[in-house]
Image (cartoon, rainbow, N blue to C red):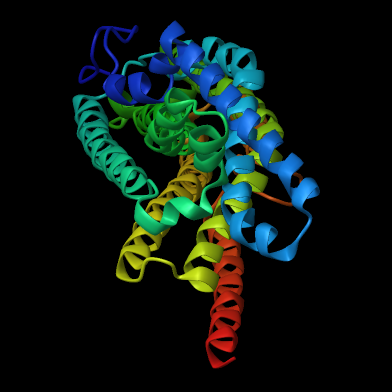
Length: 388
C-alpha cells in the first residue's frame, strides 16, 4: 500500500485534551483529596439531616428539606462510587489505552479524517464542560432558596462551620463535573475505537489494491499476493479481537457503574423537579436553573447514547467490508480465515449494561420517554396545588 504512512506506532494523541479532562486530571492527588473532602461534607450533612427528620418527625419539616436531601444523597452516591471504583477505572485505562491508541498503516485520507473528527470532538467537549460548569454555578442556592437547604442551615446556624458551608457551595460545579466525567471518558475510548475501525475498514478496502489489474485465476497462483493477504487478514482479526475484548470489558465496568449512577441521576432529577414544580420558590430564576440543568443532563444522555450507537454502527461496517472483499482471489487458507472472521463478527459489537440493555439511541429514547412522563405527572401535581 504505497499511500500508507510508514509509522506503526502513534506518537501523539489527537484527543489528548479529552483524555486530560476525563481521566488524567482525576488521577491527581488534589482531586482524590477533594473527592474525599466533599464526600465527608455531604455525608455529614446527610446523616445530620436524617437525624433531624426522625427527631422532628413532622410533615412540614420533611416537605421543606426532602428535595435537597435527595440531591445530597445523589452526590454522596456519586463521590463514594468514584472513590470506590477508581482502581477499576485505572486498570481499564491501562488495558484499553495501548490497544485503542495504536497506529495502523493507513492512507493519508483516513488519518486526515481522524484528525478532523478529533478536533470537532475536542471543541464540543470544551463547550459542553463550560456549559455544565456555568449551569452548576447558577444552581447554587441564593436568597430564599437557602431556607430549603438543610445542609447550609446545619453548618451555618447549628455548627457555625462556615468553611464547610463554603465547601458545600463550591462543590456544585465540581459535582456537575463528576456527573459528566464518565461520559467524557466513554467518549474518549469509543472515539479511539471508532478510529481503529476506520483503519480496519481502510485495510479491508486496500487488501488487494496493488493487484487489481490481475485476474482472480492469476492471483490464486501468486504466492506473494496470498502472503500479503494473509498478513493483512490476520492484522484485521487481531484488531477486531482487541476491540471485542475492550467492548466486553467496558460493558462489564459500565454495568457495575450503572446502578449507582442511575439512582443518583433519578434522585437529582427528583430534587430539581420537586423544587421547580411543587415549590417554585424563585419564579423566573427557578425556571432558568431547571432549564440549564435539563439541557446539561439531556446533552450528557445524548452523549452516552451516541457513543454506544457509534461503536455499534462502525463494527457493523467492518462485517460489510469483510463480506465485500475480493475473496474469489484468495486461496483455500485465506478463504477459511475470512470465513472464520465473518462468523465471529457477524453480530455488531455493542456496549451492554445487561443482556437486554445496550447503550444506544434506543436506550436514550426510553429514558427520554420516562423523563417526559415524570415531568407531566409533576406538572399536574403543581397545577392541582395551585387550584387548591
